[in-house]
Image (cartoon, rainbow, N blue to C red; front, side, top):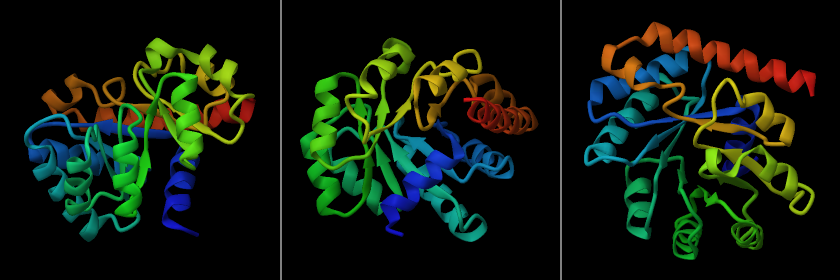
Amino acid sequence: MHKREKIIQAIVEQGVLPLYYHPDETTSIRVLETLYESGIRVVEYTNRGKLALKNFKSLQKLAGKKFRDLILGLGTVLDSKMVSKGIEAGADFLVSPGYSDIIYKACLEQNIFWIPGCMTPSDLIQARESGISLVKLFPGNTIGPGFVKSVKEVFPDLLFMPTGGVNNDNLQDWFRAGVSAVGIGSNLITKFIMENKEFDFLKANTKELILQIAAIRSSI
């Protein structure tokens, strides 16, 4: 199986892509360890601060030693320079909040899997024309599950992953609308958890989330 297909399969099977950033390296490491202990095998670390790349390298180093089956991506990639920096830092895949031909070409040239953000049918057409099969719907709280229901028949080849505003209350609505996975950041890895080092709480919530997704899928 090609690496691209392997990553897509891992995200879809997991049903959720947890994403986070914290400026403190130790906190970033503890979150990753907790997610892994909870059964998570694909994680996105977002490029949302000056220390993001430095911390990401530390996370990759840890994964290389302790979590060999972990797939670790870099999120919030906004330009081709960050594509190169992400690859240099050891990213297994890259995620952007929007679609960009420049980023697409840079990822293609440097042979790294990219998940673009899409918000309109025009974005989805561009993604489809580029041969992309998994798209991030962003911001999810603005688009809503109704968008997926409306476009799914028009784009049967695309796999949808809403990110932004996804939580326990609307999880069922998203999966019933036809998404393949969801991206969850601050609604899972909350500010409270990171500030108060409540990693047992994170573990319990993550395990519960995995079970909830499995139950929703079995009921559809």
